[in-house]
Image (cartoon, rainbow, N blue to C red; front, side, top):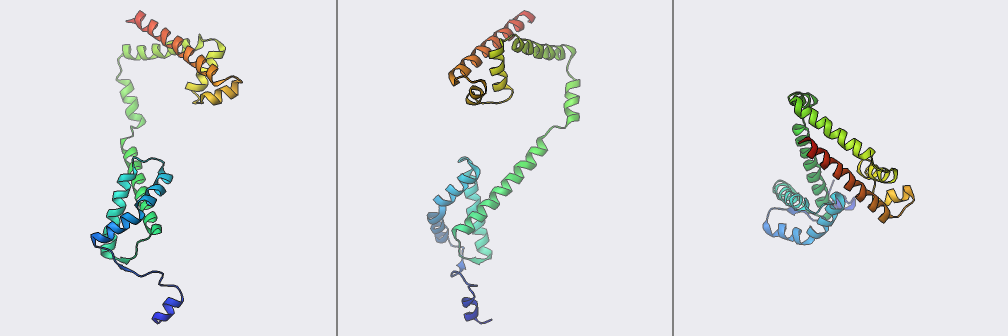
Length: 190
């Protein structure tokens, strides 16, 4: 195919150049940095990780530019950023699996508890259960919905047909009663 055929078939979309000078990196940074940061913020929702990702994007851009001839554009930078993000997520996943304790190790640790420690932990759980059971129905229901089911005050209010401030009041009173009973039991046993 001749050069005219390539141009005619839109195979050459933009002029290309080697990307290895500091001036080009600064130019790309000034042109695309803000937009790329906003793109990443929408993807990950956390501004804390963006600086690390952006640094890696520019390092990859420099490395890629030394080996290839290309013209960086926003779409290309977004692709690089997503690849960096995926790479970081994979690394985090591997670290999480590596730091995960197996069930067997947990059983071994539980078996090494002294009888007194085991009894105390079981007693503590029973104290908490009895403290929750001793709450009146309205407080107990709001407390359980919030602490164990993870519902928000608003969702609890809708479910029970009460205001958010009433939900808050019930949960605060329940927490106070449960805490008081736990402290009383702890003082009695120690």
